[in-house]
Length: 210
Image (cartoon, rainbow, N blue to C red; front, side, top):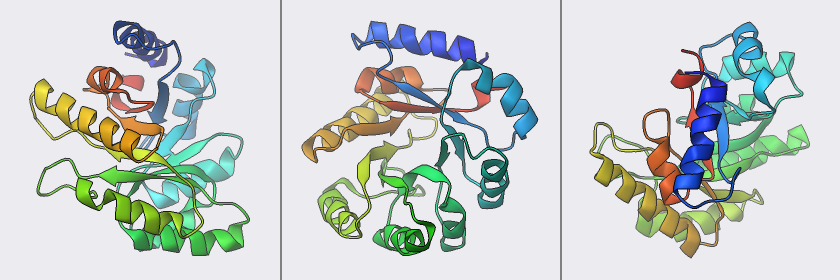
């Protein structure tokens, strides 16, 4: 596939779900791809947000293209905080200390990224906040002064579509109950289900570079 093919399919999925055109934004996962490949295969098709999960790779790409919108995805260790200065949105806050560390660093940056809280998807080995803990964590993260835009969740690995859809639907319900509007759900293999459930951001990488 390619960016145009994914965008065309995304619009078709919106129509199938009865959603307005453009209500779901494609986030291009560019980790492991150099700027030349990104500029050739992604950027010609619109000002898409670009998502990275490796600190030094993010630093170098963002320094070369500060005009682009950069997102950070994946687990956030303490040693990666310093690389988040150019980031507009962090997708995977799962502990309060992460927000506290970002807020502290941002005092020297003059700007701060917005945040999404990562919801646990039920898999024992996966990261995320348990549903019952979301109100407490949301309040504590907001107390840092940072903006929480919504929730993020990963689909359970190798799960049947019905289970994936249930995880996405439950996350959308939790976001609604918390008054949050942004939902980062769905990747290359399952974004149609995420669109059906209400995703506003889908994170696609593999399909964009094939």
